[in-house]
Amino acid sequence: MKTSTREIIENGKAILGVEFGSTRIKAVLIDPSNKPIAKGFFQWENRFENGFWTYPIQDVWTGLQNTYRSLCDDVKNKYGVEIKKLAAIGFSAMMHGYLAFDSEDNLLVPFRTWRNTTTQEAADILTSKFSFKIPQRWSIAHLYQAILNNEEHVKDISFITTLAGYVHWQLTGEKVLGIGDASGMFPVDSLTYSYDKNFINIFNNLIYGKNYSWNIKDILPQIKLAGDFSGELTENGAKLIDPTGTLEAKIPICPPEGDAATGLTATNCVAPYTGSISSGTSIFAMVVLEESSSDYNTEFDIVATPTGNPVAMVHCNNCTSDLNAWVKLFSEISSIFGGETDMNKIFETLYKKALDGSSDCGGLLSYNFLSGEPVLNIDSGIPMFIRLPDSDFNLANFMRSQLYTSMSALKINMDRLFEKNKTKIKQLVGHGGLFKTKEVAQKFMAGALNTPISVIETADEGGSFGMALLASYMLNKEKYQSLEEFLIEEVFDKSQISTIHPTESDTYGFQKYLDIYKGYFGAETEALKSWKKE
Image (cartoon, rainbow, N blue to C red; front, side, top):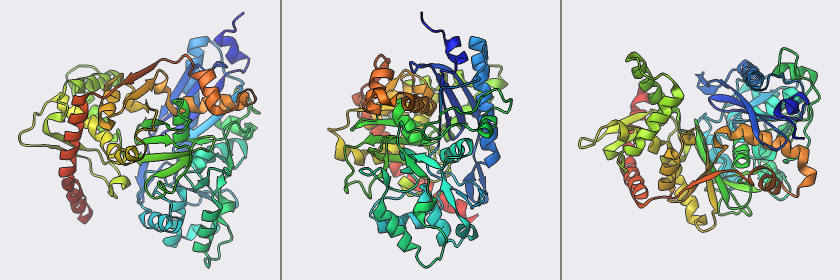
């Protein structure tokens, strides 16, 4: 007799994945067959305070509690039952950034997120010393920039971690991190599944003479691989998630991971030469490599899958933030005239309208830089919209230009990656908010990259679904030889996958748009110069 979903939840057999995204915290509950059965979410937003993009630490817990409450409401409405026990939990969050604590576990400075572009000097020095690319957003760049700035708090550091590592630590007492997230703090060795010893020594020599009481290796989280048991929910941790006291403690928790690793998991892209494109506030492409190579060391970010395989990563800070602002403006116009106010419908309608636009956007240009864009050497952002004198200024072209600009920085840098791997990349799978409306962004991305783009039916579930799958894998690891085998046999064997191939018109049109985009790029840089003079 088949067990009902209600019974699965009542018996504590459901699995929970939570991801702290840039604008939304999302929870997905899956059953033992790895199918989503409920979800919850909470909107939150970063702030620009005292020169840094940040989230107040209390917002982390307020957001988690509201997200969990939203999930519980969904479960109650669908199945008429409360969540008391879970089979496993996993927590994920935006990678990178800087959370530093002293020996008494006090947060030394406000959380500095991946979005900050204040660490160029440190990133350049570390990249040169390591002969390995260290992007500005990496934790080690934030730490070394604080050292270069002679920040008072550095001497008191006892532990640094990411947002996912922090949440996991507070809920379990374990200072650990999944290798995917850890690889965005400090370079890891894909053969030993540990922080690279050579780089550890180089960094320690670099700060020799500072007389800090700490060694870099001692203040980083312990690395865990997918499937490793990584602690269990404490009594205090259970109350941090559910202040009502309904959720029970002692639930096993898998290694906390970054959004890049959960994106790979959620799209079944953990095998060599598969890859994913994650889109939201930022956009990044991940291509899994067979082995790391010196050819990539200073060209691309090298991170890791949840099992430790090397990944070439192209990360762009800006994707949908400016686009979302325009859609919000159109929703206000609609509201004034008594029209549609459902944001989901407004997004879908405007996205689909973009399909009617010219393949090159008819002479309309958008630059979506709300924050700096290091891959294009922009340290700050000013969103801009430009229409050329002979442009075809209509809504379809405008929306198409907004979608094109969300992909442009990625396209510029993906071209270099394709030059090295064009014949080896087997698939690119899109997921995240940009791909939520069927076929639109998927079609444009296929044209932009001139390669097929697939979307799996669970694409909208995103990283929280991927995190739930990693928690499920921890429970089932002994049955499978690898995470790849688990995903293929237990999760994606019957999934519906939509693949769109590039058309000649879309590829030509996007390239024409991009050529004009590059030609007027000076307008963006000049605007930034003027803004900085104010």
